Length: 396
Ligand SMILES: Cc1cc2nc3c(=O)[nH]c(=O)nc-3n(C[C@H](O)[C@H](O)[C@H](O)COP(=O)(O)OP(=O)(O)OC[C@H]3O[C@@H](n4cnc5c(N)ncnc54)[C@H](O)[C@@H]3O)c2cc1C
Image (cartoon, rainbow, N blue to C red):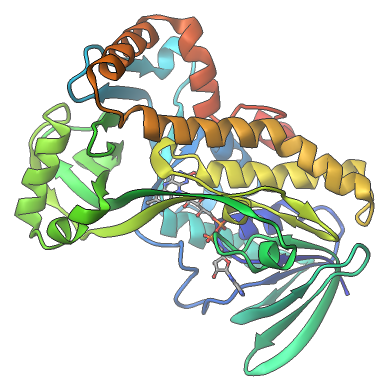
């Protein structure tokens, strides 16, 4: 019998396994994907990690294992097509070296898995598929299929880190609030003729957001929102056509686009669980909330779910109801605000009309010059929001 059984070995499930290393608990981790292939999320996407997440990953001995380090974000530039004003925020104005850093999702995934392989108190079931989850206040259990054999595993607590279509959430009969943004996000690497110098650009339009995340040597991680009914058209473009399309959407702030790398795209949906705890089970990461990637907060928020849970374990017994209510309460403010921020940004910046545009222009101008207005946004983006887990504050 495990103390804690983590279902889902994506970015968040692996982070939790690392954070439980010194807990003295017997931990199991079940992941469906083959080790050689890697979990589905460990791909070429560029993830913006907040300063808080980088600090925590350092404490968990994960950031040291990034194959290519990370590219620091020292400046954030936000603008919108057709509106006056822009927001230009420098980390040095806030006595910070950087707001966060950009890392390849694959590098983060491999670093996490390398660290997980070092853990002494962990049993890894992989490739193993969860077939059934049975919630129970004292001894929840799961049926898994591993190497062609079915096996029942029980635990004192089950953690659902099994992504947007979480089986744990379904077994708990937890409803979700769903929203289809009717957009796909195209991601690729591109090269311009200007050095990025640590600037992350976000540009909004009624067509959707466009962003560039800094990488070494004038390269950027490029993100482009495309309306669902235009996806096949954009998909059919060759690299030169896509470069021209992106340039037209983004403008010239980062220079002339010289080269475009391989593209993929993701449909954009919000799926938010109405509850994150149930008998003997909790949810975290995308299983608890899948949010619009525009604010680059999904993993950052999921990591804070994991760290908050580990802190709650220091205050409550594993099988107590206090643990469930403590975890739920510890996530309330951060979760609500981060979801609202990502959703609000996605909707507010895409609204058309003269009044909306004028309001936004005023908002941009105010935000651009007022540090008091910038501060909550900066703190949120850096991962310091709500009840802040110790590890992201730099304490162990
Ligand atoms: C285009 C894009 C850009 C993004 N950019 C950022 C960013 O810049 N910053 C940021 O913080 N976030 C970003 N995100 C969000 C981030 O990628 C996710 O929030 C994060 O990957 C969620 O991790 P997870 O472990 O919760 O879920 P997942 O990655 O979905 O992992 C779930 C795991 O559970 C396993 N699993 C599921 N069902 C079963 C089963 N039945 N049996 C066994 N295993 C199972 C799966 O194989 C998978 O490995 C972005 C997302 C997208 C789509």
